[in-house]
Length: 339
Ligand code: KG4
Ligand code: ZN
Image (tube, rainbow, N blue to C red; front, side):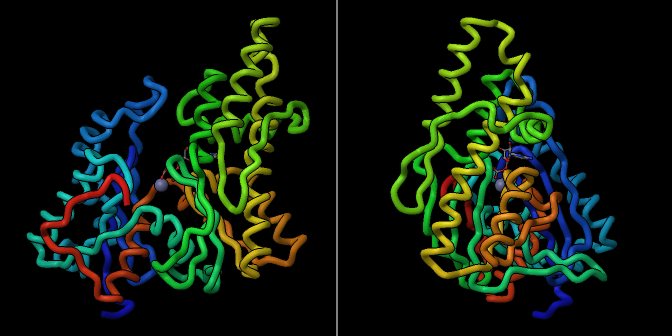
């Protein structure tokens, strides 16, 4: 095993079909097919997601191999997302990985999707120096399904030191956006509208959670009731105040996230701080983490935007580290909705 090993990564845990090729940690290609079929439903419809993965998987893998100028039999290992995620979606990626492994003789390597998001910080670009967090580091992992504070001791080894007891941060963005009748997924739309709004205009409930755990269900309810009361008096309230509502909501979510991140640094003494996952694309969160880090003397790491939301580049690189450790998966491996 060497840095010249070629890893094909496959990601299909939710509604993005993605394939990537990496030589060691150096990314050669990363192809993502999004599924627009869910927009009309205001959320991901699992059955439709599986079907779209089934349609996309072969063209997406072919495009990734072609862009990397790699032939299937040159692949040293096939890394795939085993979970957590939607079982029907995961099945497509896992089954494809098995087929390719059988046809080429390459071993399979299973990757935990959440570790993939963390390992997005170790994707190298050809001919470019990318700064990586130094171990041990803290990672605030914020996605549509998860909100966790991780203490990462080494590649693929982390301890969960805090997590949400109910909704994830991305869910809070998406559910509140839905109340405002914004398109799905709401997070990026709120982010954009927030840039033009007054973040101090409205206040919403913040949780009083002990320790390093999070809760977002109270904020969601407070937002819903506030809008219901306002709309009862003025039916055009949401339309007239959209930007201020988004900015105030986003500020509240960021304050909740960063309060515990600050606490985690104080508790662990670890000042290498990274963020990861779909919500780490949020412009407000990115600038708030950088500013907080500057104030406290932390080294902060923001993943490039293209590696924040679901992608196979992070699966290929996480898979490379797993492959180095010699951990391969058997042909009887099955996906896991929860891990
Ligand atoms: O990591 P990801 O692509 O999928 C999961 O593993 O869940 O994260 C998707 C989540 C969605 O909730 C989406 O609304 C949120 O990330 N998201 C954002 C932004 N871009 C994506 N939330 C806030 N601001 C953004 N710019
Ligand atoms: Zn994800």
